[in-house]
Image (cartoon, rainbow, N blue to C red; front, side, top):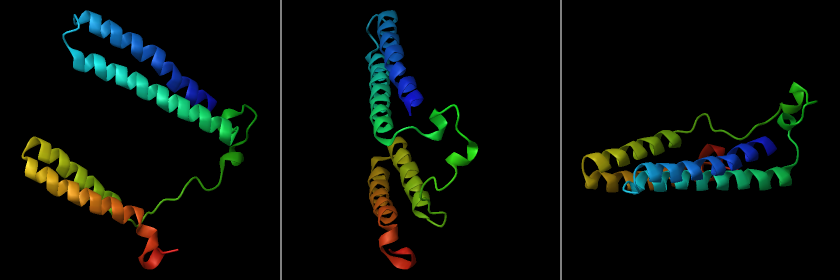
Length: 133
């Protein structure tokens, strides 16, 4: 993860000067863009720091070594639920939330309730039913 941490860490040194140049070019009248670019630089720094700390804790991956073989990266990459319907419900709730922002606030509250139900269902999917463990 050393390469990823350097790439995201370098984003700080790119986005912070860009935000200053942007602010200067707009005569500091357009604060949303300046603040947004500054926040992107901060987010890039946080991701770079997290990847740096995680890379030190986990150690070298096969992707980080020049002498690695393809079979070293084989194996389980994570745990995914191909039969789960909760991501679809959560996506529909997020779409309803954006619809509520555009059309009417009352839709946003219904979508937020659906999002809470979908998130709880997705988190506790393996605690109940056929796939409980």
